[in-house]
Length: 466
Ligand SMILES: [Zn+2]
Ligand SMILES: [Zn+2]
Image (tube, rainbow, N blue to C red; front, side):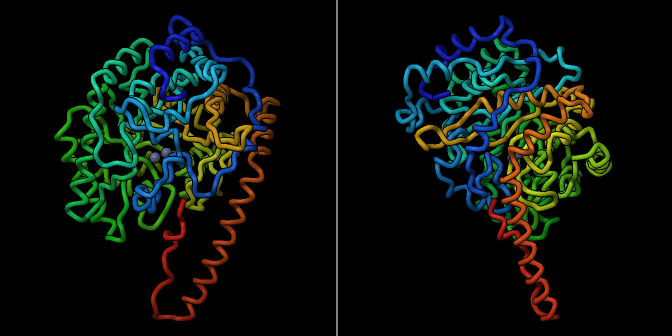
């Protein structure tokens, strides 16, 4: 939804398309095919919807261009992003944009209480995230609380705050349960340098305070990066910053996200998450969000029911089931254990629909926010990249339809087959990259072995720029 439209107008039209409660019964049947649109999505391999924060992200965050991910670079709290003018569309296009793309599913019509949504835009003010969530039929949502490119941001305006409270009430969003803001990519709580660590802490605390003013209880962030320092020390610094932040706030739960990368990135293993939590004094203020793409890329399989069970048993044994608070639902363009962070549309990646069937039918996950961070960019008729939010609207319905679906049914098999076919060329492309990199690394490793006693082959994390 273009940020220049007033929330009043948006609200009026969105409400027309929804029931009095702002929600509706689930759509019957399978979501319509988006194959033509998805095939048109041409993503650079290192363009990851909003999840590119592997080891390199912290370094490169400042360099990211506004065009990289227009959905998420809006600056909440500022009235009108500078690009507002450019985004103006024809009256017809505007009217289409204002119609809800899907009605929200009434949770108790589902066999399991799964709250599925997406990471929506908060451009123009945090209150807009609610309408944007309603627009795609989401029952949960994520947002950025401030600009991802600036350390210092204006506070949330009283109007935005009021708007957020009144709209969440009107649309019956329990924001304390189903809203999961995403932390700033600039922040690395593992920073060792005093000045940088203080800057990171100030920004982090500011986000937590924003959560509390909004009545939001869960706050998701990337644990951090060692910057080459000893892992245990870096983890100690994260926990120390968390303890300080917990004392400076009262209710918000800091939710660690598992990561896909390796090397300097903290949080790629369940052990990392456990080690941070172990040092957190108030255990009621810390949790974990599992990103399905990151888990898979980091070597935690979710595809078969057995593999899924094994991964969750590992999580429960190492971290503890009580710490699991939320999900990021993303398929993976990169193969298993490749440590590449490349989100794919649901069912089109290496995880496949079966993995999401496992997640959607796991009773223990009920009530948690489950947020899509899948790619929605596609080429418009003029060749320019546009966001197609219908993709999220359809993916929400697709995931909801998996609840209770028989995986032996023709319906499931047909869906699985169609989505896998859609993602086939992209999977082949990334698989090829991964294979070539492994061959290169093996060669490097071989040479290094020959030069016994000399410096070890350089860790590959510098090469993983996604
Ligand atoms: Zn993330
Ligand atoms: Zn994520």
